[in-house]
Length: 169
Image 1: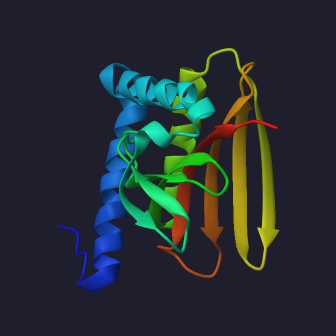
Image 2 (image 1 turned 45 degrees about the vertical axis):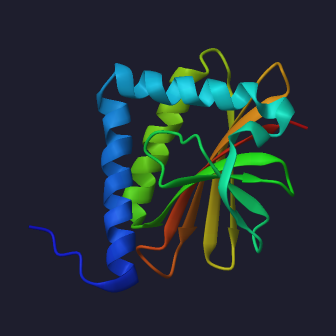
């Protein structure tokens, strides 16, 4: 039995575990889970010219300038539309280093399968003890997908994974 504790940390532990199981299923189940992820990703990519406003729903987060989205990439805790920088983003947060590493690996593999024939670029930046790793794909239609891992060196259970979709430069 796994002991999750109480309070906000317990909620993050549960959310991280649920996200890990969902993403692990993407890499181990070649059928419908990956097809569902790819179908949603293609739908989001297709809506890029509309700035994802057709997915805008629910609550507006004033501080972040983001709307909750009504379409989620499978395995992600939440998805939002950022109206300031015109992107669609999904996230998993409160992750251990190990879980974040595994989710990043699984997401990169899954996105590669969704975007066959596209090469990706990798970059990483270490700033004040936070390492931000980015794997990015750009389509011929000038759209991009990024899988981003935000690794907090000094604390375990505080890593984040993001998937961003937006117009490419």
